[in-house]
Image: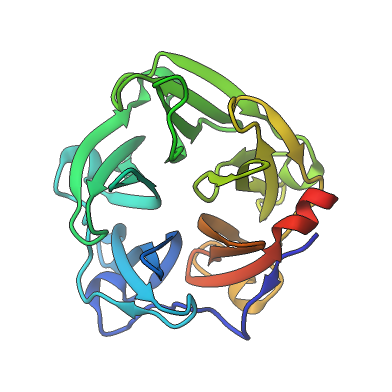
Length: 294
């Protein structure tokens, strides 16, 4: 199975006349709600003396390809000390009537897992760091599952080089930790990490994750976790389903990168929104049934 790119180029590129996203847009959360496609994307402006400060912007679309954007970020860095240098790589789920956005809080030295909540995807309330660096150290690539297990929340995250899930009765205290996936194949030999938010299907929890090889190339893979026990892997595709091949995937702020933070499953069709070379956002599609049949 391979994902096929939609169109002949990126679907979202930086806006040179917008100061906070003038240089790069990438690594976007994606969710389909109310019949529309919503992106919460990371944007960077390279300013003298402060070259890599990240914000999170919002874009919306009726067809999933042509997006309208807000002219201001929905979340900015520097508001609290833990986010002094950036709010990065959001993943969004909806639980009951509330949207939950996990993101990386970066203070210039530490990467920790933070959370914000919203009722409309536009106005976000910070809930603070929910998994700090005391247990796992440098930690990224987090998403909540949009379902509780035995009354407990479940959080996917990545203390390098493995993918973990943790359980907790509330969103600030995680009392049980499980390593779910380790690097297994050559294309992911250096490290793996959660990509898109876990997607609920009748067959299990679909994960679109990333793997990094020894040459520091980022590719995307697919795995399926047990519906009732997300610590169990049912299926894992041995080959990457998307690799950097096109110019905007091969060259950019960080070259040779396909990296996702969000995907949407529409019937059988999987839509994966992905960051290309940490510079622009692309879209690739594939068949979920084909993955299951492999």
